[in-house]
Amino acid sequence: MKKTDIFIAICLLTIQLSFAQDFKVDLRTQLEKENPMKIYNNEETSMLDLLEVMETLGIKINKFELGKFDKKYNMVLLSDKYDKGKLVKTDTLAQFGSTYHYYESGKPYYDFIDKIKIITKDNDTKSELFIKTYSFSRKAGVELNRTSENSFFNWRSYSETNWELNKKIPLMVFASSWKDEKYGFDRFCGVAHLTYNEKETNELLALSPSYVMIYYKVSEK
Image (cartoon, rainbow, N blue to C red; front, side):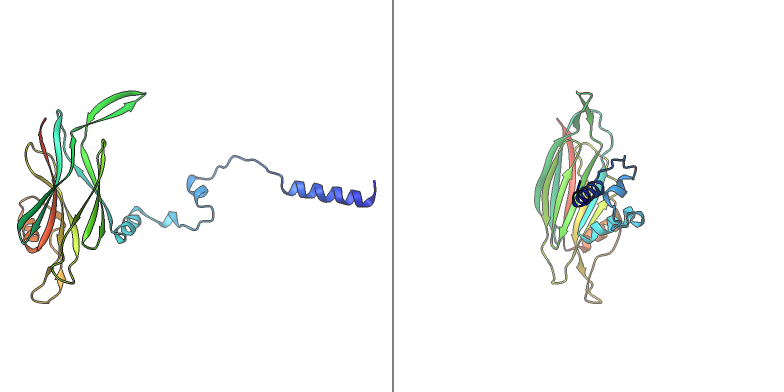
């Protein structure tokens, strides 16, 4: 064999070896696999950090306990819009039942729902609603009018949301800021978690020039 042929053969073998694929079970964690260059500081990122990021994007997750059901009921999720303390509009956001079905080993079963989740995405005077239970999901929206050029809007949730038959159960309120007459700027303060017909809750609703209340009702089938 000529020297040139030997040299070429050695070069080809070197190239083949350099591109050889060695297989080995990847024992890295899932996070290490998804973030191999460590461009995301996942070890230093907490759930609170993620919630704060969502808040800057106008997104908030709200979960409400409904209590225990003992049989099938009809349920309806509604919104009431108030302007200067007067009810001006009522909308039906969703209608559903107190049961849901699921599968286990291919067999269907039924159970009662125990909570409802409402994800809000705010955009100035509007808020999109993503409503979910175990049995359905819906989209809806609410909108308020400005009462001044500096008006801003916030959500407040109720702390006690267990169902009662044929009773209006408030879940959350989308309310407008109000003008501070003494200092001349818009403000939004007061109780962070609402309680039905409680003094501080009523004061917040009385001060807000416009708001939308989200609530549900349970009735016999």
